Image (cartoon, rainbow, N blue to C red; front, side, top):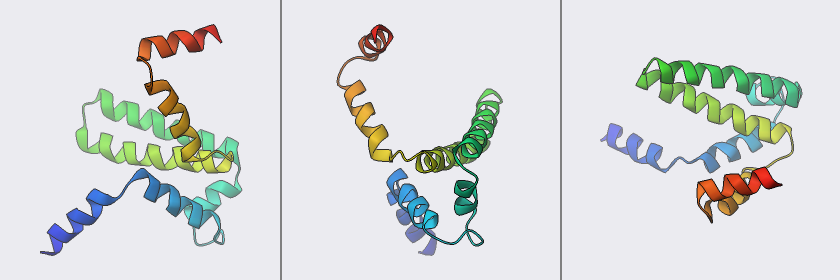
Length: 116
């Protein structure tokens, strides 16, 4: 029963939940929070960490290591949200752009960006 309950909880966990956790940890003291420590080092440091995680995610994908890809993908998402927070950008800001882009086909959207 415990395993089934744990799975139900995990199924409901969203990227918005992660963003809320990052927001809460950003407001906490630095010593107890890895997130706070990252944020204290500024956007450039957060961007480097995101880059490291992106490379690790790519390697996992190229190696076709599903388990590693999932784990690195989670790290990548976390560090992306931390970078957004460090840069004063919200997940909702990114979602708004995605909503605009998905209103038309990907090829049309890309062509429109190239004209701008």
